[in-house]
Amino acid sequence: MMSEKTNPYTLSFGKQPPQMVSRFFETQDIIDAFKSDPPANQVYILTGVRGSGKTVTMTEIAKEMDRDKDWIIVNLTAEYDLVESLAAELGEKKELKQFFKIEGLSVSLPGITIDVKNVSPITDAKVAVSKMLRIIRKKGKKVLVTLDEASNNESVKKFAAVFQILLREELPIYLIMTGLYENIRSLQDEKSLTFLYRAPRIELPPLSMRGIAENYQKTFSLDTKKADEMAALTKGYPYAFQLLGYLTWRAGGDYGSVITEYRRYLEDYVYDKIYSEMSEKDRKVALGIAHSSTGGVEEIKNILNMKQNEWNPYRKRLLDKGIIIIPERGKVSFTLPYFAEFLMENYQE
Ligand SMILES: Nc1ncnc2c1ncn2[C@@H]1O[C@H](COP(=O)(O)OP(=O)(O)OP(=O)(O)O)[C@@H](O)[C@H]1O
Ligand SMILES: [Mg+2]
Image (cartoon, rainbow, N blue to C red):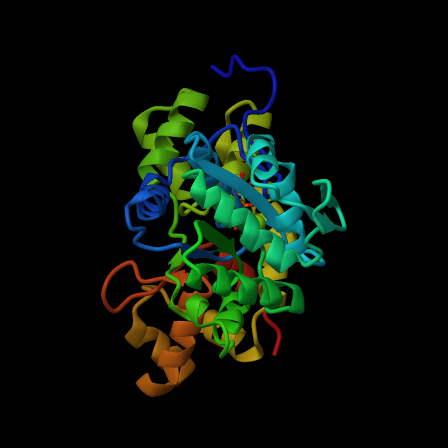
């Protein structure tokens, strides 16, 4: 077993891991919507708790789309001026340079100069992008923009306002955006950004337990029962899948021996952060869930001494943030392995 010399699992966020468990359905839905004619949607938003695979999933879709020569992919990170970055990125694309030249496009912006003699250049990023997209449309091509870690700040709002205009002009531009639920929600609530309000939000579910078990079975030469047992320790949480694989590989395949370390990593690298972003009341409700033996809503309401109408908004908040799921009617369960234990050990009034 484990003929590979280097650890096949990774602890780094935001990079494509060598070991992937497929999110075929989520990615295919988005790709199909973008590629259908007319497109079913031009904007998708991916949300989910930290470590749920938003960046990886978005990158996966972008990579898949990039294999189609009609699509031009532009990856933006929330930075100072997203519209200027978009103009600059499009201006840099080799496959577009020729078209821009033929069409006499002349642009002068920070980070981009497309020079045409005897034409006064466009000096407004918005105008430049719109002009570029018209040329791109004429050539039968489309642009997919990815924007990681969007939140409600000036730069994203300004970009979204421009994007909305480009959509109205029926230009071939598409967008996938990721972000934590709270940040996305606040952005979607901006009155002026109606297209965002309507944009479908996909909350990333846990990875397939079968997929995880099969992966571990192969890497560590486990029998089916052991592989299922090991997979169950991750609850399908993507970061946990990598982490448990990583530690187990280091321990020569003995997953039972790494549990303490596994829990410590989870706590230090994600749970502390997730916890710090929860409100006092969220924490209290989560602790109630942690204390329940069945995950049954009736039991939890009893523990918390809450009525249904008090419980509902908190249940919804924890669901929206991706901290809990509803495994079956009348029950809730944490998406994060050992999160209940973490809460019981760390909760303070
Ligand atoms: N489909 C997948 N299969 C296997 N591992 C995955 C998958 N998706 C994500 N991961 C792993 O999970 C971890 C978190 O992934 P990613 O960085 O995409 O999360 P994120 O939701 O963007 O987190 P953040 O909110 O902190 O930006 C990484 O270690 C990554 O390798
Ligand atoms: Mg990310």
